[in-house]
Image (cartoon, rainbow, N blue to C red; front, side):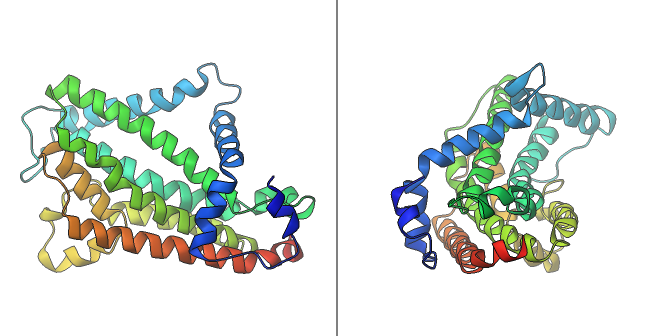
Amino acid sequence: MSHGQLINAHLPPPAGPRSMFAGFWRERRLIAQLIRRDVLGRYRGSIMGVAWSFLYPVLMLAVYTFVFSVVFEAKWPGSLAGQGKARFALLLFIGVIAHGLIAEALIKAPSLIVGNTNYVKKVVFPLETLAWSLMGSAVFHALASLTILMVAKLLLEGSIPLTALWLPVILLPLVLFALGISWLLASLGVFIRDIGQMTGVVSTVLMFLAPVFYPIASLPEKYRAWVYANPITVAIEESRAALFTEIAPDPAMLIRYYAFALVFMAFGYWWFQKSRRGFADVL
């Protein structure tokens, strides 16, 4: 715990964008410890341990390949269609990875403070770090899945394009947006316990209203604007273009995407910091 946290314990917590990033840097070691605890805790008691982080996406990719490529013999419509049977599963899998980043925040964030009441009541603790650790754990598992996706593409299609290096740049705004969601829902989850019941449904709706199982080009023109309003749509479409058609993302689109993500992230942090002083009264 930093010395600054102890000095300012009774002052209103800073809520600006500068304090958001400064707090991350100040508490980076604590955040790293929390991420490690979350990752190891997820597999505590299992024989395979952290290896499940890589084994699980391998099993899921194998299931997707068998079901969609062998059983249904599905073909991806449009320019991304490939010759191999596994192309549909690979295209689907990258959509699942992107959705997983948002789903982790939606499902777990509402209980982030409620499930750690000892941090609220007993000690002076930088509560905002819990959201950083939640997304850090989600990023770890997303990276494990991306690693499996790259290996599968190399083995099944023979190559990985250089434009795949754009993937971290494309997916980072989604992580920033999910951080904003985490802070917002962590706060709301303290005061409105029903939030946790609703977010699972929202996560499922976002998955089907994003081009996870289909390309956006297959939709009628009048519906595409609604699908693009989904925060994960751009990440999915641009990731597929970079990995399967060797097309780099449009710079203007990336700037807009980052601006939107940073604004929402700052809003979520501001909301969390402004409402956190009421946590102890409710809990």
